[in-house]
Amino acid sequence: MTDRLRFGIFMAPFHKPGVNPTLALQNDLDLITWLDRCGYDEAWFGEHHSAGSEIIPSPELFIAAAAQNTKHIRLGTGVISLPYHNPLWVAERMVFLDHLTRGRAILGVGPGALPTDAAMVGLDPREGRPLQEVALKIIMQLLQGETVTFKNDRWDLREARLHLQPYTKPHLEVVAAAVASPSGATLAGTHGAGLLSIGATMSQGFDALGYNWNIAEETAAKHGKTMDRKAWRLVGMCHVAETYEQAVKDVAYGIEHHFKYFQNVAAFPQMALPGNDVREMVEFVNTSGIGAIGTADMVREQIDRLWKQSNGGFGCYLMMAHNWANQEATRRSYEIIARDVFPHFQGHYQPMMDANDRAAARRPELAATHVKAVEEATARYQAQNG
Image (cartoon, rainbow, N blue to C red; front, side, top):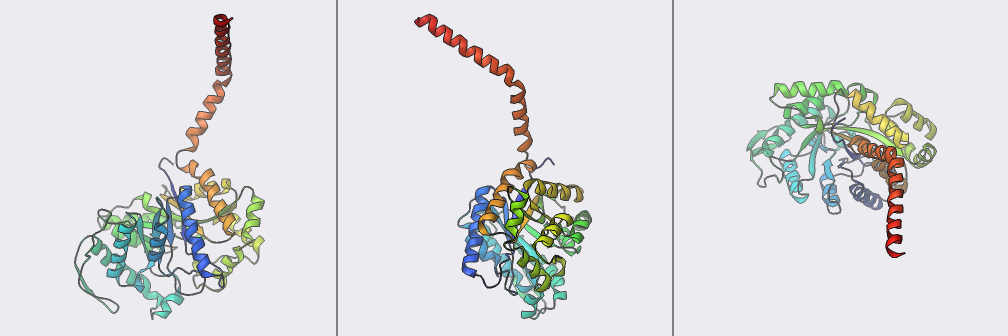
């Protein structure tokens, strides 16, 4: 691994229904400020409208709020559900955010994850992916300065164009999401966009990592585009503490809600996780390979495993924000990962260790020289002032 691996989080978010939503959202914003301070590269925010747990309905609005108290971290829509929106307005809002964030905004797109969202706007979930393909094509045309006339059953665009040009040249980064199917990889390849593998560590997603990237590259070649592995994000699950025992104790706070939400509430079977209690859930995360609950060493091993499975590497590792632990323990986990995991994948660990080893190897020789130099200086002083 020669390039600097980026790190970030993917925040749906997941909050237990019934908690104070105002406080929960403020805590989410505060966490992004903390991640910016710790040196994280990216944070992504979801769009959901039902089921009571994933309570950010507009990632664009959340990005606008988060941008006010951060300086460096890039902020992505993870994702905008394109079938729910007029593509002209999606493009307009994202270019607006591109200016407000001075180039830190990223457009992540998907077909919509929760069928209960689609049902409220009369959309059959099976229509989502075809509509997403149409919408993204229009958005890319608009971002590239084209004028678009298009009509289908949902949208009627008549000489539509952007009146505000992107801050980022030629335009802000665009990323297509994928869970297990090849549709996301195909969409990314069609437009030469980035790829966001949300289910990267799930069994199907992990097995398909190299396969999906090959699909993206092959599709890109057919459309005269190229794919960049640096624009490939993989999402996994982690929580760490100073000891394994402390990490397990931490996640007893909220891991059951997370698992049972996907087992019993969210009609999103690709993300469902087995387990009846905290012990079984922790064991499943660690033995199945979908994540790491324990120590920083375990996270490093997880990333190494993903790197090898990807058959060539990726650009960014995003941790799923899950509220398994309370706010204090969650912040501590992200800090430990920044302290003890980042350096191994960003080129900092080995040079410092090599410098330490060189200094240790020469210590006896140089320490003796240093002592002798002090003795000689003392002798000169005594000779001159005795």
